[in-house]
Image 1 (tube, rainbow, N blue to C red):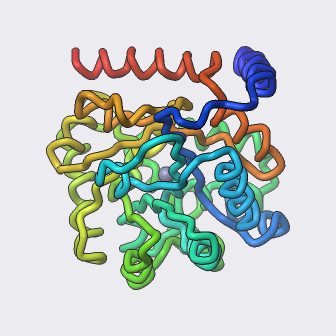
Image 2: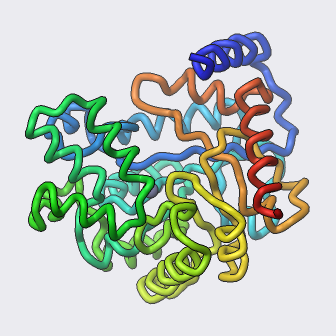
Length: 328
Ligand SMILES: [Zn+2]
Protein backbone atom coordinates (compact mmCIF):
# COMPACT_ATOMS: atom_id res chain seq x y z
CA UNK A 1 0.00 0.00 0.00
CA UNK A 2 2.76 2.40 0.99
CA UNK A 3 4.60 1.48 -2.21
CA UNK A 4 1.50 2.33 -4.24
CA UNK A 5 1.07 5.68 -2.53
CA UNK A 6 4.71 6.61 -3.13
CA UNK A 7 4.37 5.63 -6.80
CA UNK A 8 1.21 7.67 -7.24
CA UNK A 9 2.86 10.71 -5.65
CA UNK A 10 5.97 10.32 -7.75
CA UNK A 11 3.91 9.93 -10.90
CA UNK A 12 2.06 13.15 -10.12
CA UNK A 13 5.37 14.93 -9.55
CA UNK A 14 6.79 13.43 -12.74
CA UNK A 15 3.81 14.69 -14.74
CA UNK A 16 4.02 18.11 -13.20
CA UNK A 17 7.72 18.40 -13.91
CA UNK A 18 7.65 16.41 -17.13
CA UNK A 19 10.27 18.51 -18.88
CA UNK A 20 13.56 17.77 -17.22
CA UNK A 21 16.75 19.53 -18.10
CA UNK A 22 18.70 17.03 -20.05
CA UNK A 23 22.19 18.31 -19.45
CA UNK A 24 22.25 16.50 -16.13
CA UNK A 25 24.59 13.64 -15.49
CA UNK A 26 22.06 10.89 -14.94
CA UNK A 27 22.17 7.17 -15.54
CA UNK A 28 18.89 5.25 -15.57
CA UNK A 29 19.33 1.48 -15.62
CA UNK A 30 16.38 -0.72 -16.58
CA UNK A 31 16.14 -4.45 -15.80
CA UNK A 32 14.35 -7.00 -17.98
CA UNK A 33 14.32 -10.79 -18.19
CA UNK A 34 12.44 -12.77 -20.84
CA UNK A 35 11.41 -11.27 -24.14
CA UNK A 36 8.49 -12.81 -26.00
CA UNK A 37 6.96 -12.25 -29.42
CA UNK A 38 3.46 -11.66 -28.14
CA UNK A 39 1.59 -11.83 -24.85
CA UNK A 40 -0.14 -14.96 -26.10
CA UNK A 41 3.15 -16.79 -25.63
CA UNK A 42 2.55 -16.61 -21.88
CA UNK A 43 -0.51 -18.80 -22.26
CA UNK A 44 1.80 -21.74 -22.76
CA UNK A 45 2.39 -21.59 -18.98
CA UNK A 46 6.10 -22.19 -19.53
CA UNK A 47 7.38 -18.87 -18.21
CA UNK A 48 6.86 -17.30 -14.84
CA UNK A 49 5.09 -14.16 -16.10
CA UNK A 50 6.34 -11.81 -13.42
CA UNK A 51 7.74 -9.26 -15.87
CA UNK A 52 6.29 -9.81 -19.33
CA UNK A 53 7.87 -7.82 -22.16
CA UNK A 54 7.45 -8.27 -25.88
CA UNK A 55 10.08 -7.31 -28.45
CA UNK A 56 7.79 -4.42 -29.41
CA UNK A 57 7.65 -3.31 -25.78
CA UNK A 58 11.44 -3.11 -25.64
CA UNK A 59 11.46 -1.07 -28.84
CA UNK A 60 8.89 1.27 -27.32
CA UNK A 61 11.01 1.70 -24.18
CA UNK A 62 14.05 2.62 -26.29
CA UNK A 63 11.95 5.09 -28.31
CA UNK A 64 10.55 6.73 -25.18
CA UNK A 65 13.98 7.05 -23.61
CA UNK A 66 15.46 8.65 -26.71
CA UNK A 67 12.49 10.97 -27.01
CA UNK A 68 13.24 12.11 -23.48
CA UNK A 69 16.83 12.87 -24.42
CA UNK A 70 18.49 9.75 -23.00
CA UNK A 71 21.40 8.19 -24.83
CA UNK A 72 21.56 4.38 -24.64
CA UNK A 73 24.79 3.04 -23.15
CA UNK A 74 26.31 -0.10 -21.59
CA UNK A 75 29.00 -0.83 -19.02
CA UNK A 76 31.57 -0.49 -21.82
CA UNK A 77 30.62 3.16 -22.30
CA UNK A 78 30.83 3.78 -18.56
CA UNK A 79 34.23 2.12 -18.51
CA UNK A 80 35.42 4.33 -21.36
CA UNK A 81 34.34 7.32 -19.26
CA UNK A 82 32.40 8.88 -22.10
CA UNK A 83 28.94 8.93 -20.51
CA UNK A 84 27.83 12.54 -20.25
CA UNK A 85 24.31 13.88 -19.89
CA UNK A 86 21.25 11.68 -19.50
CA UNK A 87 21.99 8.04 -20.25
CA UNK A 88 19.98 4.84 -20.04
CA UNK A 89 21.28 1.29 -19.80
CA UNK A 90 19.05 -1.57 -20.95
CA UNK A 91 19.89 -4.81 -19.15
CA UNK A 92 18.51 -8.33 -19.54
CA UNK A 93 19.09 -10.86 -16.77
CA UNK A 94 19.62 -14.61 -16.70
CA UNK A 95 20.62 -15.52 -20.27
CA UNK A 96 17.31 -16.60 -21.82
CA UNK A 97 17.63 -17.71 -25.45
CA UNK A 98 14.52 -15.62 -26.10
CA UNK A 99 16.72 -12.52 -25.65
CA UNK A 100 18.20 -13.32 -29.08
CA UNK A 101 14.91 -12.03 -30.52
CA UNK A 102 16.23 -8.56 -29.67
CA UNK A 103 19.11 -8.66 -32.12
CA UNK A 104 17.27 -7.45 -35.25
CA UNK A 105 15.77 -4.65 -33.16
CA UNK A 106 19.14 -3.73 -31.68
CA UNK A 107 20.77 -3.57 -35.10
CA UNK A 108 17.90 -1.64 -36.67
CA UNK A 109 17.79 0.97 -33.91
CA UNK A 110 21.46 1.04 -33.00
CA UNK A 111 20.36 -0.03 -29.53
CA UNK A 112 23.13 -1.23 -27.20
CA UNK A 113 22.22 -3.63 -24.45
CA UNK A 114 23.75 -5.82 -21.78
CA UNK A 115 22.83 -9.45 -21.19
CA UNK A 116 23.73 -10.72 -17.72
CA UNK A 117 24.21 -14.47 -17.96
CA UNK A 118 24.07 -17.22 -15.36
CA UNK A 119 26.69 -19.51 -16.83
CA UNK A 120 25.47 -22.60 -14.95
CA UNK A 121 22.23 -22.77 -16.94
CA UNK A 122 24.15 -22.24 -20.18
CA UNK A 123 26.43 -25.16 -19.29
CA UNK A 124 23.67 -27.52 -18.12
CA UNK A 125 20.95 -26.44 -20.55
CA UNK A 126 18.48 -26.67 -17.68
CA UNK A 127 15.48 -24.39 -17.47
CA UNK A 128 15.53 -21.66 -14.83
CA UNK A 129 14.12 -23.07 -11.59
CA UNK A 130 11.44 -20.40 -11.20
CA UNK A 131 10.02 -21.28 -14.63
CA UNK A 132 10.02 -25.00 -13.73
CA UNK A 133 8.15 -24.17 -10.55
CA UNK A 134 5.63 -22.05 -12.44
CA UNK A 135 5.11 -24.60 -15.24
CA UNK A 136 4.67 -27.58 -12.92
CA UNK A 137 2.46 -25.81 -10.39
CA UNK A 138 0.32 -24.25 -13.14
CA UNK A 139 -0.30 -27.75 -14.50
CA UNK A 140 -1.52 -28.71 -11.04
CA UNK A 141 -3.86 -25.73 -10.95
CA UNK A 142 -2.04 -23.89 -8.14
CA UNK A 143 -3.08 -20.22 -8.00
CA UNK A 144 -0.46 -17.74 -9.28
CA UNK A 145 -0.19 -16.03 -5.88
CA UNK A 146 0.63 -19.31 -4.16
CA UNK A 147 3.28 -20.10 -6.78
CA UNK A 148 4.82 -16.66 -6.30
CA UNK A 149 4.84 -17.17 -2.54
CA UNK A 150 6.70 -20.48 -2.89
CA UNK A 151 9.14 -18.85 -5.31
CA UNK A 152 9.93 -16.15 -2.76
CA UNK A 153 10.37 -18.73 0.02
CA UNK A 154 12.79 -20.73 -2.12
CA UNK A 155 14.87 -17.62 -2.79
CA UNK A 156 16.01 -17.77 0.83
CA UNK A 157 17.91 -21.01 0.06
CA UNK A 158 21.27 -21.65 -1.62
CA UNK A 159 21.02 -22.78 -5.29
CA UNK A 160 21.74 -26.48 -4.66
CA UNK A 161 18.95 -26.65 -2.09
CA UNK A 162 16.53 -24.89 -4.45
CA UNK A 163 17.33 -27.36 -7.22
CA UNK A 164 16.95 -30.30 -4.83
CA UNK A 165 13.55 -29.01 -3.69
CA UNK A 166 12.35 -28.59 -7.29
CA UNK A 167 13.61 -32.03 -8.33
CA UNK A 168 12.01 -33.64 -5.27
CA UNK A 169 8.68 -32.03 -6.14
CA UNK A 170 8.58 -32.53 -9.90
CA UNK A 171 11.31 -35.00 -10.85
CA UNK A 172 14.65 -34.60 -12.61
CA UNK A 173 13.00 -34.43 -16.04
CA UNK A 174 11.14 -31.26 -15.11
CA UNK A 175 14.44 -29.37 -15.22
CA UNK A 176 14.55 -29.75 -18.99
CA UNK A 177 13.19 -26.76 -20.93
CA UNK A 178 10.04 -27.54 -22.85
CA UNK A 179 10.37 -25.12 -25.77
CA UNK A 180 12.51 -22.38 -27.22
CA UNK A 181 10.77 -19.81 -25.06
CA UNK A 182 11.94 -21.18 -21.68
CA UNK A 183 15.46 -22.36 -22.44
CA UNK A 184 18.76 -20.69 -21.62
CA UNK A 185 21.17 -19.81 -24.43
CA UNK A 186 23.52 -22.53 -25.56
CA UNK A 187 27.29 -22.00 -25.24
CA UNK A 188 27.45 -21.38 -29.00
CA UNK A 189 24.71 -18.76 -28.78
CA UNK A 190 26.53 -16.93 -25.97
CA UNK A 191 29.71 -16.95 -28.05
CA UNK A 192 27.87 -15.61 -31.10
CA UNK A 193 26.06 -12.98 -29.05
CA UNK A 194 29.33 -11.71 -27.63
CA UNK A 195 30.50 -10.94 -31.16
CA UNK A 196 27.63 -8.49 -31.68
CA UNK A 197 29.16 -5.01 -31.40
CA UNK A 198 26.10 -3.60 -29.63
CA UNK A 199 25.97 -6.30 -26.97
CA UNK A 200 27.83 -6.44 -23.67
CA UNK A 201 27.91 -9.78 -21.85
CA UNK A 202 27.79 -9.47 -18.06
CA UNK A 203 28.14 -11.74 -15.05
CA UNK A 204 25.00 -13.00 -13.28
CA UNK A 205 26.87 -15.61 -11.17
CA UNK A 206 27.34 -19.22 -12.22
CA UNK A 207 24.53 -20.75 -10.16
CA UNK A 208 22.17 -17.78 -10.02
CA UNK A 209 23.08 -17.55 -6.36
CA UNK A 210 21.23 -14.96 -4.33
CA UNK A 211 24.52 -13.86 -2.91
CA UNK A 212 23.41 -12.78 0.54
CA UNK A 213 22.18 -16.32 1.21
CA UNK A 214 25.70 -17.81 1.08
CA UNK A 215 29.02 -17.03 2.81
CA UNK A 216 31.68 -14.72 1.34
CA UNK A 217 33.86 -17.59 0.10
CA UNK A 218 30.95 -19.11 -1.83
CA UNK A 219 30.04 -15.71 -3.25
CA UNK A 220 33.57 -15.23 -4.53
CA UNK A 221 33.79 -18.70 -6.07
CA UNK A 222 30.37 -18.48 -7.78
CA UNK A 223 31.07 -15.05 -9.28
CA UNK A 224 34.55 -16.19 -10.30
CA UNK A 225 33.23 -19.33 -11.97
CA UNK A 226 30.87 -17.20 -14.07
CA UNK A 227 33.76 -14.92 -15.04
CA UNK A 228 35.81 -17.95 -16.10
CA UNK A 229 33.01 -19.65 -18.05
CA UNK A 230 32.06 -16.46 -19.88
CA UNK A 231 35.71 -15.78 -20.64
CA UNK A 232 36.05 -19.28 -22.06
CA UNK A 233 32.97 -18.77 -24.27
CA UNK A 234 33.53 -15.20 -25.39
CA UNK A 235 37.26 -14.58 -25.04
CA UNK A 236 36.53 -11.62 -22.77
CA UNK A 237 36.18 -11.12 -19.03
CA UNK A 238 32.95 -9.31 -18.14
CA UNK A 239 33.33 -5.92 -16.47
CA UNK A 240 29.71 -5.70 -15.24
CA UNK A 241 27.68 -7.83 -12.87
CA UNK A 242 23.98 -7.96 -12.02
CA UNK A 243 23.50 -9.42 -8.55
CA UNK A 244 20.69 -12.01 -8.72
CA UNK A 245 17.61 -10.53 -7.09
CA UNK A 246 19.69 -7.39 -6.57
CA UNK A 247 21.00 -8.81 -3.30
CA UNK A 248 24.47 -7.84 -2.11
CA UNK A 249 26.43 -7.41 1.09
CA UNK A 250 29.99 -6.53 2.07
CA UNK A 251 31.28 -9.90 0.87
CA UNK A 252 29.61 -9.43 -2.53
CA UNK A 253 31.20 -6.07 -3.16
CA UNK A 254 34.63 -7.29 -2.02
CA UNK A 255 34.34 -10.33 -4.29
CA UNK A 256 33.23 -8.27 -7.30
CA UNK A 257 36.08 -5.79 -6.76
CA UNK A 258 38.63 -8.58 -6.31
CA UNK A 259 37.55 -10.14 -9.61
CA UNK A 260 38.00 -6.89 -11.49
CA UNK A 261 34.30 -6.24 -12.04
CA UNK A 262 33.95 -2.51 -12.63
CA UNK A 263 30.17 -2.04 -12.43
CA UNK A 264 27.49 -3.73 -10.37
CA UNK A 265 23.77 -3.24 -10.83
CA UNK A 266 21.31 -3.77 -7.99
CA UNK A 267 17.52 -3.63 -7.82
CA UNK A 268 17.39 -0.38 -5.89
CA UNK A 269 15.11 1.77 -8.04
CA UNK A 270 17.15 4.95 -8.23
CA UNK A 271 19.05 7.00 -10.75
CA UNK A 272 22.84 7.05 -10.58
CA UNK A 273 25.28 9.87 -11.32
CA UNK A 274 28.42 8.42 -12.91
CA UNK A 275 30.37 11.69 -12.78
CA UNK A 276 30.14 11.60 -9.01
CA UNK A 277 31.34 8.01 -8.53
CA UNK A 278 33.94 8.28 -5.79
CA UNK A 279 34.51 4.81 -4.46
CA UNK A 280 34.58 1.33 -5.92
CA UNK A 281 31.36 0.63 -4.05
CA UNK A 282 29.63 3.56 -5.77
CA UNK A 283 30.31 1.82 -9.09
CA UNK A 284 29.21 -1.54 -7.73
CA UNK A 285 25.87 -0.41 -6.30
CA UNK A 286 24.25 1.22 -9.33
CA UNK A 287 20.48 1.60 -9.06
CA UNK A 288 18.16 -0.22 -11.44
CA UNK A 289 14.45 -0.15 -12.20
CA UNK A 290 12.79 -3.54 -12.65
CA UNK A 291 9.21 -2.30 -12.73
CA UNK A 292 8.72 -1.79 -16.47
CA UNK A 293 6.37 -4.36 -17.96
CA UNK A 294 3.81 -4.85 -20.70
CA UNK A 295 0.88 -2.50 -20.31
CA UNK A 296 2.68 -0.19 -17.86
CA UNK A 297 5.52 1.05 -19.97
CA UNK A 298 4.87 4.76 -20.31
CA UNK A 299 4.05 5.17 -16.64
CA UNK A 300 7.07 3.23 -15.39
CA UNK A 301 9.50 4.89 -17.83
CA UNK A 302 8.13 8.25 -16.69
CA UNK A 303 8.86 7.30 -13.09
CA UNK A 304 12.34 5.99 -13.81
CA UNK A 305 13.38 9.04 -15.79
CA UNK A 306 11.65 11.69 -13.69
CA UNK A 307 13.35 14.00 -11.30
CA UNK A 308 14.15 12.25 -8.06
CA UNK A 309 10.87 11.53 -6.31
CA UNK A 310 10.08 9.89 -3.01
CA UNK A 311 10.61 6.35 -4.32
CA UNK A 312 14.11 7.18 -5.49
CA UNK A 313 14.97 9.03 -2.29
CA UNK A 314 13.94 5.93 -0.39
CA UNK A 315 16.05 3.72 -2.66
CA UNK A 316 19.05 5.99 -2.12
CA UNK A 317 18.53 5.79 1.63
CA UNK A 318 18.39 1.98 1.39
CA UNK A 319 21.57 1.95 -0.66
CA UNK A 320 23.37 4.10 1.90
CA UNK A 321 22.18 1.91 4.76
CA UNK A 322 23.25 -1.19 2.90
CA UNK A 323 26.61 0.34 1.94
CA UNK A 324 27.15 1.28 5.60
CA UNK A 325 26.38 -2.27 6.62
CA UNK A 326 28.77 -3.32 3.90
CA UNK A 327 31.53 -1.24 5.43
CA UNK A 328 30.77 -2.37 8.94
ZN1 LIG B 1 18.30 -13.46 -12.44
